[in-house]
Structure formats: C-alpha cells, structure tokens
Amino acid sequence: MLNNIQPLISIGISFYNCEKHLDFAISSVLNQTYSNWELILINDGSKDNSLEIARSYDDSRIKIFSDGRNMGLSFRLNQLVDLASGEYFARMDADDIMHFDRLKIQVKYLEENLEIDVLGSYAYTIDNNNKIYGMMKINKKPKLIEDVFNNKCFIHPTIIAKTNWFKLNKYNNEINRMEDAELWSRTILKSKFHNIEIPLLFYRQAGVPYLSKYLLSQKSTRRLINIHFIGLFKFKLILINYAKCLFFLMISIFKLQNFYFKKRFNNLLNIDISKNQIHLDCSIKKKSNFNKN
Image (cartoon, rainbow, N blue to C red; front, side, top):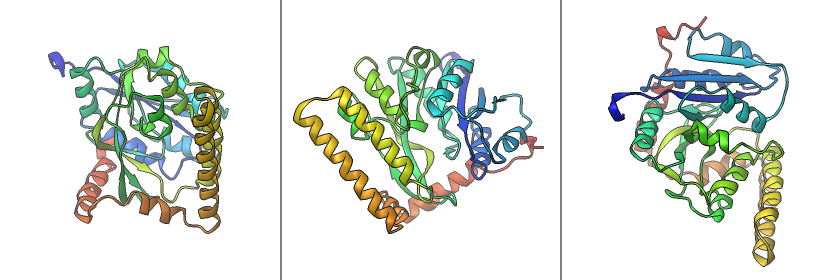
C-alpha cells in the first residue's frame, strides 16, 4: 500500500434464498489476508434460512440489513453502494467464494494504478460441491462496447472500484439479469477498465439451475443491443442471441447443462486443479475467531 495505509474496502453482497452457499461466501471474506474491510449483507426477501445464517456471525465488521422486500439485484446493488463507508467497493455474489488474497491483490493494484476506474479478474469455475473444474478468462483491457456483448469485459462478482465511481454510475433498476452489461455498455467509453489476469474468485456455475435465468438475461441483452447497435450488425447480434437461447433450451431439455459447462471451461490441468482446490479450501476454512453463534 502507498504510505503503508490500508484503505477501507466495503464488500457488498445481496442474498436471496442462498442458505446452501452463503456460509462459504461469508467465510471467504473473513479469511481474507487483507483485514481493513466491512461486509454489507442485504437480505432481498429470502424465504429460507439465509438471514439466520448471516446473523449467526459475531463480527463488528459485518453489517446486515433486511426490510422483508424482494427488490431484485440492481436495486440492492445501488443500496449496497449507498451504505458503503469504504474508499473502495467490491462486488461478490452470495453463492461465490473469494480467493483469500483477492482484496490484497486488487487494492494494491488499484493503489499503484490510479488511472483505473474498475478492476476485475479471472475466475475459477466451481460446481455445487465447491469442486473446481475450469477457469474463466476475459480481456485484460476492455475498451469497446463489443467487448461487453462478447462477454469479454468483466466477470461481475470479481470487480472492485472506488465507491464514488459507483455512486456516479448507478445500476439501472429496469434491466433484469444484465444490470452489469448495461452499466459497462454505458460507461466503457468514458472509463478505464482493467482485469488482472489471475483468478481471484471461485465462480459457481455447474449444478446451478440455469435455463430461466439465462433466457431472461438474453432478453435483456436483446434490449441493450437495440439501444447500442443499428443495421445489419444489430440483426446479426439478435440472430446470434436467439440461436444461443435455442441451444440452451435444447441442452436443458436433455439435462446436459453441467456437461456443457465442464466441457466449455475444461482448460486446467489436473495438477492445477488440485493446487487451487487447496486454495479454495483455505478460503472457506472455519476459524475459531470467527465467533459464529
């Protein structure tokens, strides 16, 4: 850190019916090698035991909010930013797991590269049993709107930025499932985006019910395409979008989603998987000083 001062990081997690995985997400924050953080948890109207799991932790750095309403992710992300006290705001989903060095690496990078507005990273893909099976990569320096629609801009839960940047660039509450793409497409030409080319998050994908969420995401993508593109190129993107929807419908009918994800991201050697599986296990390991009730 510059001047050996650790800036405060606000970590924001909105959760909805995530009792199976929320414990892992919170534990991975508590296991961070960077210690000057606050964790803001917002319950988005969960019907399961997620809120009880969140409240079971006794740590003054964890702040929990619950108003009983289900408002959706975009609304909650803006609320998380408004509640943040830190100089930086870091995203994370309630079913993912941080690498134990994520915050230390990202904050150091931002402090040494002050021109960067939003910073992301690569991510390992994991299944419902916390087993690594691959890695997701994106562009190191996304600059074009096309990077957003080619899924080469950011892996959303890996990002961190100055809190003020998020306050000046709010998420659009009217966009469902693609609130991140809408934000990137709106800001990429006036902001400096960057990705660290190492995985700093364990991103849960295989084993998660996917079809309905995917179709909703693609519907929002078509809406954004209509805003940003014209002519034959727009027609091409819309056609590709519908083809993707048909493809995912077919693999869902034949229950091949997990097979597809594992084949698509099967880009790690077994020795790499074993080494980084140890890192994942360390990231969620329980410690006595967690003071969990």
